[in-house]
Image (cartoon, rainbow over all chains, first blue to last red; front, side, top):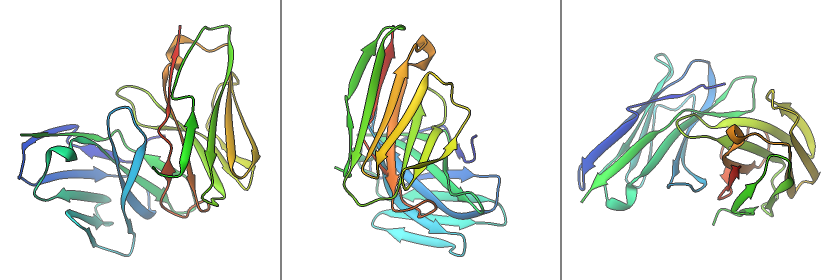
Length: 111
Length: 113
């Protein structure tokens, strides 16, 4: 069953601009994760934010979590052509150890 | 390279064939997963294994049969598949259930003809 819902479904921006993707979910969670997938390949884990955290940084990535709104955002600053990929949020719900993914956002960085 | 290896990378099979997908991890992880990724759909969790025991079967048709002979290996046996089963099949592992980060293999692109 789907848990996360990413928004927008697709995003095209110029290289150097910032890209923001959002994720909404339905249940109470232990943590929320963001993954990246290059076309037809496996997913790569980017960052995990726990339910008691509000913001986390990793390099050019910034993730926020608002548990009251059941939403998260992923910000990629100073985008590069190599950031072109699909980005997925995934959640682990309380009492359920499974990692459930959303449909993803397709990000295209224009040169 | 995530440490999770899937073979084959591509597979074309007829509806009457029997084939198997293989997943291998030497990360010392205790949990392993099979996901199905179809076009324009979210990743669908198919099976979950923890310490070689199946803990989840998400209403997957019996033509998909998983096997976990040890904590490093996971198979997905395929039999009498349908064209709509064509998809990217992804294997993942994590340290334990509920441990957070999952490590994914590169996937097997399956085409059923």
